[in-house]
Length: 208
Image (cartoon, rainbow, N blue to C red; front, side, top):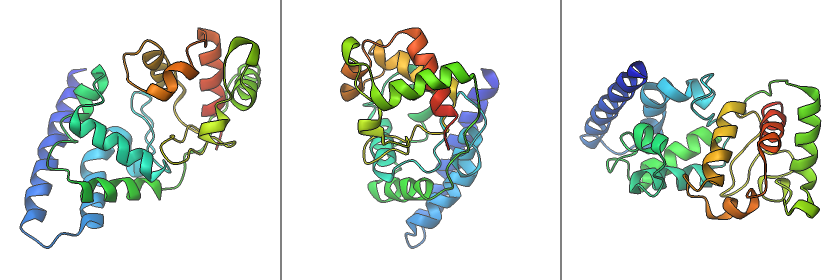
């Protein structure tokens, strides 16, 4: 934990320096976004947003509108679950204006998508069925109706394919307990049990 905190403090310091440097020059938001992604965001999310640390989400190939919405929510502190406060409130601060947020979102949306990681076959089969069909008797809608048949995401709905299983599990639990605010999702996943979540997360991690 100490290492992560030090890494975050260093990232925030670098971000501040980068923003100060570009303020003295003509604005080139795409260039600034690439520099911040390489020197700041990569410390947690990996190069191109395709990192291997399951504590942090993969950002590569996420829908641009979704990323813009999340960065704005971090900046305004609308996303206030503990991890958001600890890791994103500092980097996504007031120095990130709408132009830079848009450029950051566009940069990550254009990165190559993550590759799927295979897992338990029985869980993948159960997760696929839940994702594609839901369960009408249990009041569980199909995830594909919002996140897309291939889980590539669309609009305000994130890409789930290839995401870390552990990260997905944690977010499902946080949203279900209303620790993380996600109004659309609260009702959608309220009837999922622990085994459902494990199956969905294992299935989604296996997808390209």
